[in-house]
Amino acid sequence: MLTIRLATYLVRDLDEAMRFFLDALGFELREDVTHEDGGRWVVIGPPGFGTGLHLVVAAPGTDLPAAQAGGDVAFILGTDDFAGRHRIMDAHGVRFLEEPRHEPYGTVAVFADPAGVRWDLLEPITPNT
Image (cartoon, rainbow, N blue to C red; front, side, top):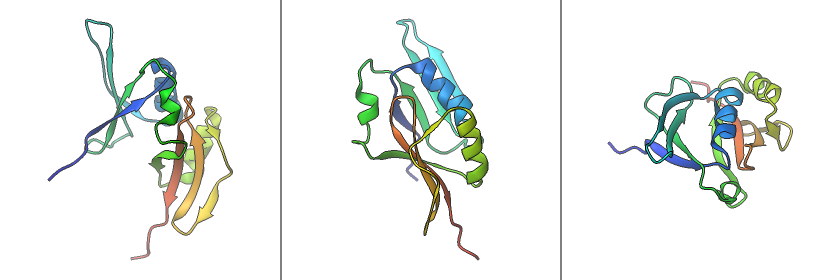
């Protein structure tokens, strides 16, 4: 078996990003270690998502974060309750770039994180089985 466990996610400001991910998106902090040189190793992930992909949040000190996906959506945040998650994120000031829309694959809306990186909030349609 081969899996991707961690992906580096670039941010402008680590503390601002942590408030966004933990408060607005409801992610959980997995690790936050300060090294002797002052650098931090911060790992976050969706709640209860113990074996899936986690993000290593890093601040490179440049304007690079917003360009991570060349202006396209960089990440898709999946949910099984679009309306509820959208309400929570909206209450935390998440900047949605469009109104929710219904597509053949599910309900989706694009939002931006504090660095301007574009995400999809998506509740996929589950096939009837």
